[in-house]
Every structure is written in C-alpha cells, then in structure tokens.
Image (tube, rainbow, N blue to C red; front, side, top):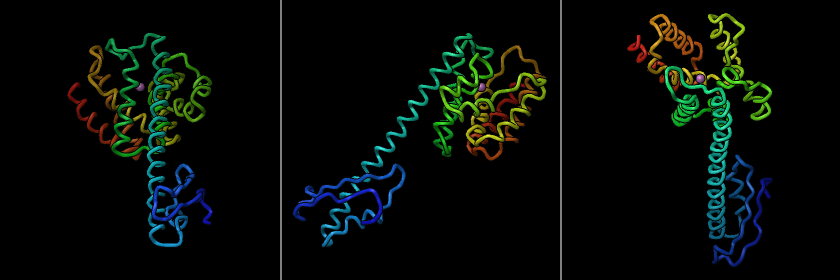
Length: 250
Ligand code: NI
C-alpha cells in the first residue's frame, strides 16, 4: 500500500460499482492522484476503472468541501473584523472627512478594493489582508491598543496594523516616510492595504482644502506608488489611474 491516507475498505461483485466502498482521507491541500490510482489497482481493468472513477468522485466532493470551507472562513473573518472596527470608530463618532458618512464606509471601501484586486491577481493570504484592511485605522484613530488587537486578532494582524499607523510623535512631514519604511519591512499583504487605502482616499477632496494641501496629498500618493512598487500590479494600476483623475480637483 502506498503511504498515503486512504484505504479500500471493501468491494462487492465487480459488476456493481455502487457496492465498492471507499474511505478517503486526504490531507487538506495534498492530493496524490498517482497513488490514488495505485490504490484502485485491483485484479482487472474494468474494476480498476470503476474504482478510479469512484475515487475521483470522492476527490471532487472533498475539493468542493475545502473550497466552501475556505470561503466561509473569509466571510467569518470579515464579519469579526468589521464589527470590531465599526464599533471602535463609531464610539468616537468618526466620519469620513468632508462628509456625514460613518467611518466604516471607508473601511469597507478599502476591503472592497482588496477583494477586487484578489480576483484580478490573487493575494497570498487574503484572510490576513482583509483583517488589515478593516482594522488599518484602529490604532491611529481610536482608543484601541496594540495589546487589544493582539488579543482579538493575533500577533501578525497587530504588527501589520502598527506598520500602517503613523507615528504621531514625529514631525508631520516625516510621518509618511517613516510609515512607508515600516510597511516595506512587512509582508506584501501590508503593502497592498496601503495602496488600497490611498486609492479609496483619492476621491473629491473636502471643500476646505486649499491648492497646496491638495498638491501635497497628490505628491504623497505618488510617493506611496513609487515606494510600494511590486506589491500588486492591479492595485498599482488603479492607484496610477486615481492619481491622473485627481489632477482635475487641483
Ligand atoms: Ni484609511
């Protein structure tokens, strides 16, 4: 028997394919079809073919289950993170600058950019990224602490959100460069959230912004695009287009 996790439990007369009972236990992401074929090696070709078809059915069922489970995990992760973040931003009555919209609209827009980018060019760890997208402003804007994030979402998420948080102890002019340096020392998932954040923010600026402020904001966005080159081609293209469109507001 080949050393994989399955066995042919029993078989009845070869004319009846439904009588062949198989129990297949595949490791989550490992499927070794040649050894499955070997397991199905019984005495004649007809039965072998029937066994193989049966195993393929098991494999397809198992694959569908894995796919469904992963998708459910992403939904649960999203719900957990958005509820936490929305409550924290709502507790300080935070709205999107220049609008009456609750801040959670910004967070869900960043998450939407991430999910769209993931469909165009898969992001390695989408569950991790979606948490960062929804939580990315909690340390900077609300009373959430690093320890609290660690406790609720784990070390990686807390560290990623910290990298996306500006250090308010630095002079304003140095904050973006400092944040970008920390982002570049983090996994690529952190980079893509920074791109998605700026894409989302490059909408019509608040009415009270003067020309120099808008120009500075545009320049900062250009710096983000340059520094985070190689994060995700789709999001880089999106940000490039947003930069072009933003010229109309200046
Ligand atoms: Ni943001």
